[in-house]
Amino acid sequence: MVRGKPARGWWGRLAHPRTAAATAGPEPDTGREGRGSSAMGGSTAGVSPEASAEAAGGPAEHGSAAPSEPPAPRPVADTLATVLGPHAPGAGSGGGSAAGGGPGQDASAKGWDEESWDEDAEGEPDGPRLPPVEGPSANAHPHATATVNAAPQDPAAARSRRSYLAAQYTEAAEDAEQRLEELLAIAAEPPPPADFDSLRRHYRPRPLPPEADPGTPPAWADYAPPEPSGQSTGQSAGQSAGARSAASSVGSGSASPASREYLRIRAEARLAYQKALREFRERQSELAEASARVHAEHEQAERAREHAVREFNQRLDVCREAYEDAQPQAVESVLERALATATARLTDQLPGLPGLPGTGSARVRYRSLTRTAVVDLALPAPGIVPAALSFRPALEGVEGIQRPPAEVRARYEQLTARLVLRALYALLAVDTGGVLYGIVLNGRVGTPDPESRCLVSVDARYEELVGGDALLPLHHAEAVERLRALSGAHSDDPYAQHPVQPRAQLPMTDAPPAPEQLSQGEFAALAAELFDRMGSTGWSPRLLGRDGLLALADEEVVCVARRPQVISADAVRSALEAAEEEGRPRCVWATTGRFHPDAEALAEERPELRLIDGVELRDLIRTQLGAELGG
Image 1 (cartoon, rainbow, N blue to C red):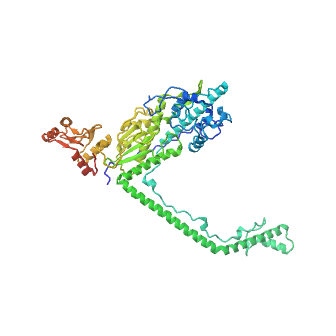
Image 2: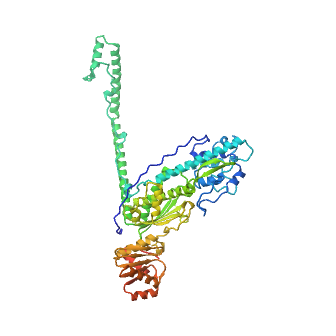
């Protein structure tokens, strides 16, 4: 059964307008449709391997221990590696004439083959990649290029080619920045609901198909020709006044041509009507059988639909009961679905955005002992932020105009903050059963694997998450402040990928967690809940560290430690002194390990001192909380 917890509040959701897409200028005719980045490759047909190998050398990627500030302007190979990043959109390749290559130039001379072109055309929405750079640094970046062909050529043509390259690289960088802004705007919106109520299905009967209608007899009104103008539309004994007047005129020999034509048309219509009526009566039994068959099939399909909806809701109710009972597998399934729904919203709105983690970008484990979800969340690499938004021709190539380093770092930190806060929001929103007492979320670069670098590790309890400001603030800078206000570890420079130590690792087994596997916040919450069940009132933590905590209660000072393994007599005396200073009549020291014999001897001399070793502590957790502490 779910242990009791304080009543929860909620906060308002802020919806923010999406940033309007930047107006893009007309693209040159490159021989292939695509985004702005798809036109970049056509102008590299004249790149020489020697110049490419010389210009492509550069620093390592962001994953290395590099300085946090982006490098100064340098040749285009390094510039593109910095601007577009390791996950930049694929750059396209245009026609040979635009790049200086004539119609007779074969594929190998352009640096790509037909296989790579076709594969890119199917797999990369942003167009084919630029020709690879030859030499030692050819694999440093997929978009690295080099200087203009050093072969003798018209100086004016070379300048034109460099200007064209600069324009295309600028367009690609601006497009990447615009998509980044769209990503930030979507990440600031609440994710779609994924709780049990939103998943519940409702049966709504569908109307009968048209084939179920047995049909109606043909009506004379559908065949009767319009009467001559000026005549009444009334009928007498199945014949209109106009028809009787026309017939009497014919009998008297004074009928006009118009009257005779009307009677002829009317007679033909009467024959058609009688024929249709006869055919309907002949097919009436067949139509009735077909209608009955369609009725039966429709009713059978509707019963099946209703049964499927009822079965789904029944299975959903079973899952809900398991979730509300805090069964780990059920809780993990619900939380992973919530994160997948939040991620799908991003990928659906920005399909093919390079560097954005997609399906399987989060892993969740739930600890019943502390009612805490431990989450590993994949974050985009720093290369998703363009380090330069404009390029200009250089003496022998193209160089980027670097953005201020502080601006680049701020953009990446805003993005990571938005994604982490959005994930926390999704987890809290789906927790309608109140089984989450806390969340430990590790934001890792690229993948949620434990080997990936951790840039942020949030270790927050439920009250801290919902009791402060909204998790989805209006401005991106406010999101950074909101994330850093949460308990946990935060990288001093996420853009340079300075890692932090995760507050808790994702459990690999279902065994009860050992004390050292719990996060700092989990261990403190476990101690607070245990002593609350034991009757302590007025619990107020005063010192909280990696190894344990010291708290004040109304009648006692409580020390709870998980390290060191053996508690000395001096440590116990310090707790007694703290109790005397705080005016508390009793002192309790609990440890997951054991006490030194001298400490046990001191407890025999001081009746106001109570020692709880690891064996007794685990037994109290089992009896008071109905949970198991490993180790």
